[in-house]
Structure formats: structure tokens, C-alpha cells
Length: 183
Image 1 (cartoon, rainbow, N blue to C red):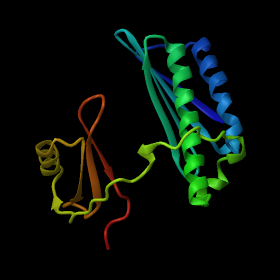
Image 2: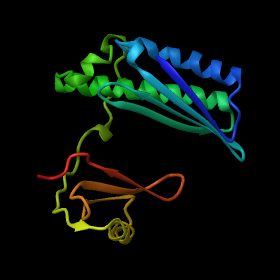
Image 3: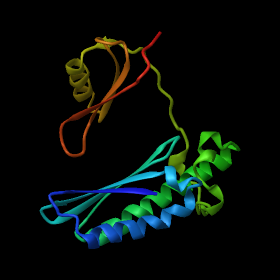
Image 4: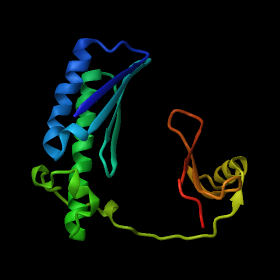
């Protein structure tokens, strides 16, 4: 795995870098092509807490974990545990669907333990559809806030792309936009 370790409001010492890389090596056994897997860890310090964000870029998907703790090294451990939990969930979901999809080219499912129990949260309990109206980002934010939802999907009036505006954990708004326009 290729590592990129970034510090925000904190200097990434050799000790911190070494600890992160050592802990992340636990994840190596899950990937078939380690040389192509890139990992970015962002370590930041806030008043009394340390935050660790780990993102693993696979050819077919991205895994991400974000953890805050008063102890930086505990946050690193918790982030790795969270990533391993995501891998178990993916394996369970793939086993249930009897399909490896395109993930089979990147993830070594043999090395992932089965998830202990099937969670009720893994089941789609409601499906909703609605007509996407063309609107500006400002109107989408207004509608999202009026609904009291943390996100809102709309059709961007400038480029006819499906877009989702959302409230970011660190404040402000974010937009996720489809790369392909509606035909």
C-alpha cells in the first residue's frame, strides 16, 4: 500500500507516521494488488481531541473512516477497526448477493472474517422517488433546510447534472455531482 500521511494543526512526527503505517499494514491482507492501493491518513488536533481520517482508494471503490478521540493512538486503532468492520460488511453483502461485482479484482475476500450477525440496518426499508427539478444550489440549500434533512438531491440548472447538497460535519455545505449529464 502507498501511504500519504498529512497533519493539520499538528506536526506528523516519525513516531506518528510509523504508528499509522504499522496499524494500516493490518489491512494489507485484504487487498489483492497492494502496489495499486493508495491510502491517505489525515491527522488533526482540535482543542481536547485528536481526529484521524483514513481513506483507502481501491480501483472500484473508496473506503473511509473518521474517528475522534482524546488519544491520537486510540483514534488510529479505532479508525482501523472501523475500516475492518466495513470490509466485513462488504463481504457479507457480497456473499448474500452471490456476486463479487467489480470488487473481486481488488479485495481478497478469503482473508475477511464473516460478520457476526446480520444487522437490521442492512435492509432497505423504504424506497422513495421523486421528480428532480432544475434549480440553483442556493434554492437546493433553502429546500434542504426547510425539510430539515441533512442532504437534498436536485438537478443543477447550470449543467443538467444530478447533484446532492449536504451539510458537512465541519460546517458549511458540500455538493456531490454526477459526472455524466442527463441525456
